[in-house]
Image (cartoon, rainbow, N blue to C red; front, side, top):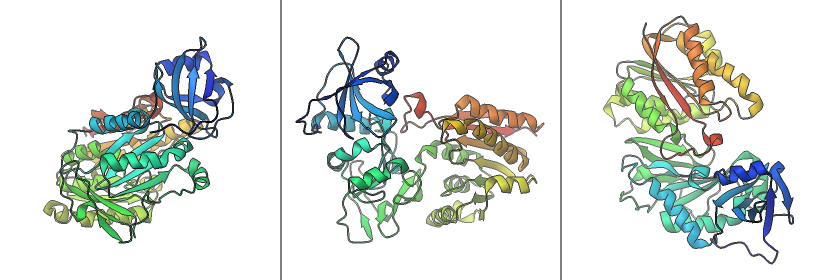
Length: 430
């Protein structure tokens, strides 16, 4: 990727000793209050070079004048030219990390996981032949055309959908970009079938993009799903829970299953295919429940799924668990959205996780299994697991910990701030 046109001198930064140490350790975030000296004003997306106290090159990254994370480092150590070949190599490296992780039965996964793959503030997810590019910093906007071109050359997608975090949507409009738009707007037909053949797949209607509804179809472990790639949460689906869904499938046989905060019903579908006696989706969002219903319908060709009764309940999970205390489920899944989006919400979130676990235990039958997950980066794994364990202890029931899980391999978390996902499996002994 070519560097920006620079009639100006290169943007040069000098930082605090603590920031120098962090950059030397490979941490990519440079905060605004860590900058001691800056030779001039910088623009969004401009390359900035950090020099240490001895005037030696330390790192180079993308500058964002409007973000508390003022620079996101791309390269550390010795000087390097960030030209098109450099960017192509970095993209190919991320793709190569996923080689061998998935077969033709799983066509939805993460191709680039931000900082974990050396693309700070950028995520690329694949749903069949449709890719979703989500940005978390305006620093990527000036480079979007070049990034999209590289993705097109290397992955040959049928379509790329742009998604932006809320904090940069206004900045996107300044670049004439909007959340949910297509990189290529020339598509006229409501449904297209793509040509992504890098994995040797022959694509079918299960790898289609419905431009009218804004959904992309894909497979996960042989189950069919739709991702709301234009308006849905994150990039349209929670790909990071794939491994935990597989674990739930292995535990579901003969059980009545509650899937709280069910969203698109992924855990329920896996449970049904695993031989569950019944599944209930519980969510406050009618849109989410409709998405779950649609996904359930897509899998009626699986005889075991078709035989499993599926109920949808629209309610606030906290309220529903307060009002329903009779043990009636053998497998309870608690997978709420982030309960601590800011550090100041951390303590209240920990209490909320404990309350949820208490409610889940109350409706859990003897010898049942509780699956509790958190996606709150501001709540540590120890804090979350501790809240669930304390809830189990307060119940006066005996539990054994079956497993604790973290990030899947296509979501590498290489810095503490990126370590958001954690899940614990508890089996009741009575």
